[in-house]
Image (cartoon, rainbow, N blue to C red; front, top):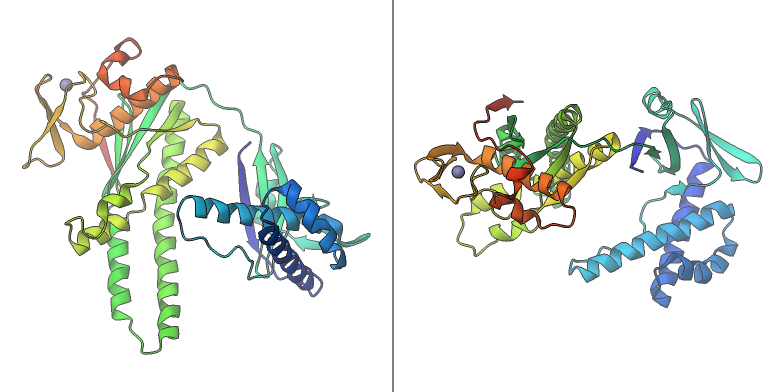
Length: 387
Ligand SMILES: [Zn+2]
């Protein structure tokens, strides 16, 4: 079941604030116990921490969720250490409260217990009520902080019957998606422009006081992220809608580790590295994957090997021409082809092959094995769109 959350602003009353603070202390207490006893599984941590939470004046519902919150934070730290990242401190700084027990949503009110037979109510706004009114949605848990309330919701969706696949090729200046029937290219230069603009603004905003400087940078950074994210949301929404109309699965390339290509000492210029390292390639994938899951569209990632070096029609190796940088030449078919179109078609084919042979190696898809599965076409029209 796919899970999402809805969020709204709210002002907690005087009873909720101390509850959140108690909850924060309980989570930190559990984390401390977990670190001391070197355990991060729910079962083990519960046996250690639950007796210690006896003195906290809060309902036992919340003690259980505090332990599971601590578990999640400890597990995240463990994962970071394992992957060689710099682990963040697992301790919680800000008061909050999470619970999946005992709460109810009646129309416009969220009701949850404070003490025995005493309840608190939060008025939900129109947006949240509208989302929760859907019959197929069930609410799983709620989280309150001093500023906001978010409710995590799950939906019962049925996977659509896949008839085709669409491949998505992400580039610095465009996103191309489609299959052998139609390819759509979306120009994303505007995102690049926004980022450049903000770099420029930041360089002009200098203050002698580093605290003020930090504040300004934070504000600008937030605004930049929001503007970029909003554009990516528009894009991922249209991709998912297109896939739903075509009854197609969404296929992405797994380009994890691409940042390693643009590191200091690789012989590239500063500006080039900045541009490529600020490329938010993952955000589109993240948004598309959860939106696809929410709509019952299958989503999968494939190995990017050979997707832009082989001809989707004959499987031959494509040649690069230095003058025509975005075009590739196929010697067998004797024609120039757009490299983004080729990549998205190849990704779609690889994905289709994966769907037809769940155990098979998707790289085989390039060598003409697919000829039995689909009729290959290369004369696809490319539709260029601008946001
Ligand atoms: Zn060819």
